[in-house]
Amino acid sequence: MTARRTTQRVVSMDGVLVAPEDARVSVYDRGFLYGDSVFETIRTYGGRPFALGEHLARLGRSAARVGIRLPIEEAAFAEEIGHALAAVDNPESTVRVMITRGTGPLGLDPNLAERPLRVMLIEPLVPLPAALYREGVAVITHRTERAADDAPGAKVGNYLGGMLALRAAKDVGAHEAILLDTHGAVIEGTTSNVFAVTGRTLRTPPEAAGILAGITRAWVLEEGRAAGLDVRETAMKPADLAEADEVFLTSTLREVLPVVKVDGRAVGDGVPGPITRALHRGFRTRAGLGDRAMPWEP
Ligand code: PMP
Image 1 (cartoon, rainbow, N blue to C red):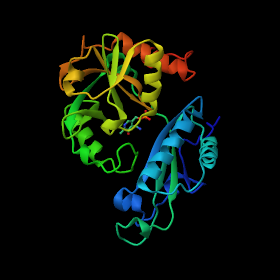
Image 2: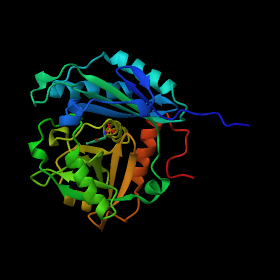
Image 3: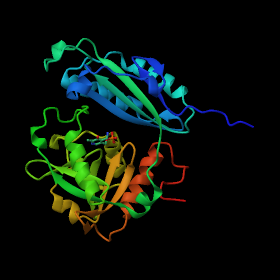
Image 4: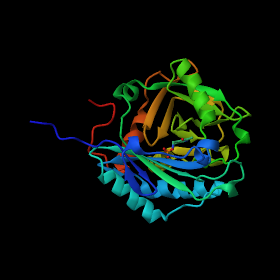
């Protein structure tokens, strides 16, 4: 018997499905030249894109923030994503939606761009190892020049600052780097938002700190309020993380991930805490996944 061939990856370019090895972008594309693009990372649950409306709304806000015209309406995006997902056989997938300002003659002037290009990469979802949820992860804090960020809150294609911070984290065996602004205030992880729990108080930096307004963050804030926690979106210093009872990260691909070490120092008891676990359970129940095993469960 021959195994059925399965398709795991597909690329949608301006709405046309192509095999990844055939997908090409011009060297004159401004996404390549200048990081002149916006994007979203979406994941599926049960094969369906999760929080799609929220992701597409944020994509629209990011594009508006940097003056990239959305090439198609939100409903058409949703349709193209559905079409691309139908072309793969994955139990769960990630969808990376990118819009670049497009190609044009060399030059920084955005008016040189001809028309936006939209690219979607559909890939099989690779879940984080269960051990990270079971044991928690280490993070470092990393000072940046983020106060000079030109488009805070927009998910733009240039992640160079985050990438360099993440390299510093990986160099010391940490999972994520928590970015600090020029004043040393906590902003967010390189691809995550950060929370601290002290007693029954749940804290996370506000949107005004220049964070990306994470979709998982919003769900967890709602869950925290529903659970009767004292929820505060407030400025934070690295000491607030180090001295908290519990710290965790949120993102689309992580959901809620416990942090047990900040800059080499144990958080609380050095193991994932009960409020982190409860918020994670609550998040998954809200997402309609209450009947599934939690990522740390066998
Ligand atoms: N901050 C940054 C800088 C990110 O790249 C991400 C990942 N999109 C997040 C926070 C978390 O956002 P979300 O929960 O919407 O994935």
